[in-house]
Length: 330
Image (cartoon, rainbow, N blue to C red; front, side):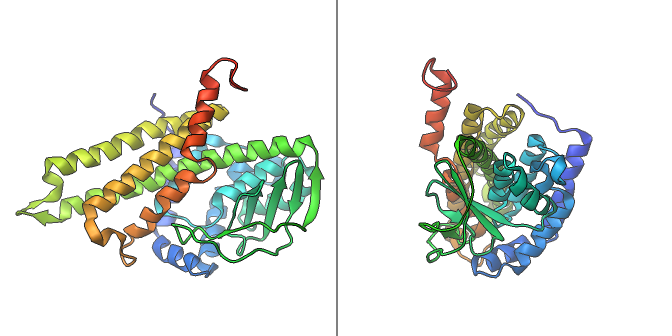
């Protein structure tokens, strides 16, 4: 299936590309990794001005309405340029809070404008960037809490820009309790998986683009390595995986069905990780040196593949929808 963006969507994508391209995101990523959130927060505010975060916020709270296709387009660009921070979690929180009018009224306008950076933990999951977020929302079963701090030390991650913390064992302000919290959390987790799939797609496209450029410049035996058949095959395999993942991501944007989201998540995550392996092999040892910007994207592929739905869990969810009587998709 082929998805075509309309003129307005295409121009929006080009606007984000120009904004992020001019922002020197490698320096932003390195600063964020070291705990300096200033450059990242400044870029976050500029993204908010373009309406990226408003795409996940209802119009009643200053947003543009829930526009999944535009979100997929935006988050692919965020992944392609390596935007750090809880970009996925912030919009997932907006989805979570829609069922709580009072809390939504307090937080959603700031999320839509880019003034508020928030993060999310669900049933014991690590919380991304708790040290930089204006608020952390934690779901435990049927309870939603606004965390009051008390986070442990920074946890190791393959991607230093993914600053992970364990949620506080207890404490915080209880915001809501009941089955509606559980249902809203399920929708938020699905949205997080969908946005992470789009982000993975962008990371993979960036890795492939950088590797193709390198293969046309590096020479061996008097010829660019990109002219060698084995190199062409490796790049073609990476491109095929990403191009197969792209329609699944946009198809999930149209349906928002859990099985479609899971399929998009596993396809985009695996394709991005394959692009990372190809990039590392073709660059050689220089590929993982910290001085080379490529390393910033190499480190993102695998953590994003596993975030908000590891491949095995996503495959199981797809199968649930294919086997009659096996679950909600039966």
